[in-house]
Image (cartoon, rainbow over all chains, first blue to last red; front, side):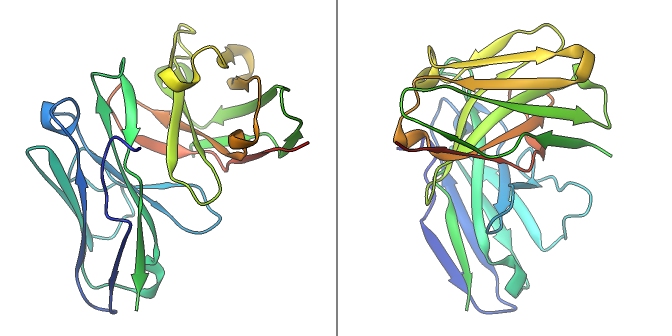
Length: 112
Length: 119
């Protein structure tokens, strides 16, 4: 079972806004560690989308944004586009697991 | 530009070992960790561990301790990940990725190496 909990799937029509949640605990997200988000397109390596809760790497459109509160975090995608259809994973650090990085189970985004 | 180039696909029998490499370029090799993450077919991302190329120190996920070994060759800016006692559940794409610190993101990724375990 993944340490971080994500919904298995979300969907939205082009142009709409969707959010993906990521729920952790007091030993990871709730302990103040940063949450990072990755986009995985079919057959490709993961791509960093959001780091440290709400920062975007160079080249990532501002349609993607992140937030964090307490033991949870969220990824929001506005102005949904067909090419956004992918799997999205959150990741953080867990101090109770000997310093392990932990991932969410992933969320499949379908653009209707 | 930052690049992580991995070795090619492997097919192994149950009980065997596999060694995958990850060659780094475009940045100061000893200034970043190299992490290993895998994705089994239809499954999510799973962290195996990391190595600090600067001092060869390693940290492995509890699940893989005793079965995984990460090493580095500073002369060629290459990191190796060896997984032993392979079973069918180890069939996955294995990725190397760069990280700046223990809790930081994985900002650059290799292209992935498919390891298939089959009798």
